[in-house]
Length: 258
Image (cartoon, rainbow, N blue to C red; front, side, top):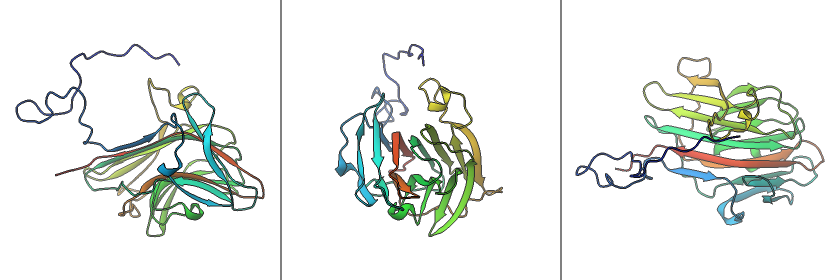
């Protein structure tokens, strides 16, 4: 998709306060410590040490060819085999008053007899987190859900009912912890290509398809309170190998550092 010419700010752009009241007033870039970000576009060589592999069977995670960088997870061919990647350390949390963002683009080779899980969670062992906010497509179904899970208790919100094989989806959520906290789910499934794939201008990240807050019907009662880590994985629903291809995974939050 054509991208319009960029605006040019030769002096830089900042979100700092003015000099002499702010240390980074004349720093020509936004302050990086305001919103911690974990973004992997899989353009560099895949480094296994950057992830904890949680698998059943002898599957693989590896770079694969594709425009913009792709990572390919492949299971082995036994029922309930899984291949999942999670960050080694839990560095994100939902904090009252703060914001939280998650986005990913992925596809799976099998629509029905597969489980796909991606988001932020405590673990992906068995693709069954105890705590997390994540997208989950259960085996034996083609419904993609947003799951809000705390200490083993879930709020499950269907966001798309016709999950298809070998089809790219952009999904994401935004948590606004200010005032009356709300969590908004996004999915590209109802957008028209090329917008469905999240181009840079504009980047829709999908359409807002569900909301959870105190007003209901989807409540935030099960919003987790523990630290979480980004992750993504796939599990077989039959004795046949499955692949999951992920284009990017993005996680960010506000941070109060003093």
